Image (cartoon, rainbow, N blue to C red):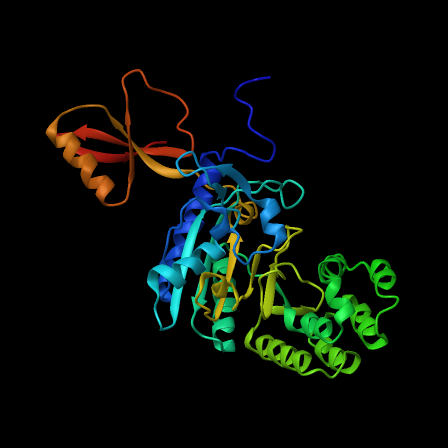
Length: 383
């Protein structure tokens, strides 16, 4: 076996692709700051009890685990940064006011999330803590769409869901509560046959509601249909009202409703959204409300946010153009060094030709040269 081979679904990012990803990261973090979000940098690993707090079984299966040689305790390499940021808000900042935080960094997955997906996504996201109203959810949706626009993506479809619908159905039936995990997996897969088999001896109202959920997908008219076919439970009515409000606040974005899209169900507590774009089979961004995660850290705070994988998003961008550069000779003359420093300070890429150097300049197009004319160093265009 060749020693330079990397593990499956782990890959190097080469110059052109890396530049696209880094440009996106910088532009998005600058956009977050203009909205008032503060950057935090959680550690790559921490004790497993903290890392997996409130995340559910699925996140535990996706997390690499190891033993800390200093303490003997089990640690985990983060598979998601959301709970880490919630911990920072709860314990390190400990503010009583609304707090906006953002982050960007690599996460690791034990298994890829889909075909051709990397096990080392570069996650970027933003969170709002301390505001329970829909205004915060609307801001997060707006910010996610603004980030996709930075990538030049204008054709975006938002899928809205709300965990309050299925939770209200389950809370009304103790038998269904016992099968919660299996039911959620069947709803995610829209497995009608499996749902019919599992629910055959449930209360009729519960069974009818669960069987209806996979078909409650489509445009805004789905909400009216849901009100007609689902039980008249307060939790369902409240969830549908919130979805209606978020749909109206989405502006010009194409919006659909999918009441069985329950990915993230384990720790989400309210409205959720997924953003889909042409060219990618899976959601390019996911977000939603997760008010209860802070409880596990001893400080419950309303919370909503979103995240996306920059490496996945960069796949949609055209190949990066070669950057215009100036080729300069190698030398230690003060006038030459001063001129090169001036050009670089002005934002130009200046590549000094090392002795014996020649040939390919990679992603740089050396279409100009720094030459000495009459004792002055000037930039000349190359044919």
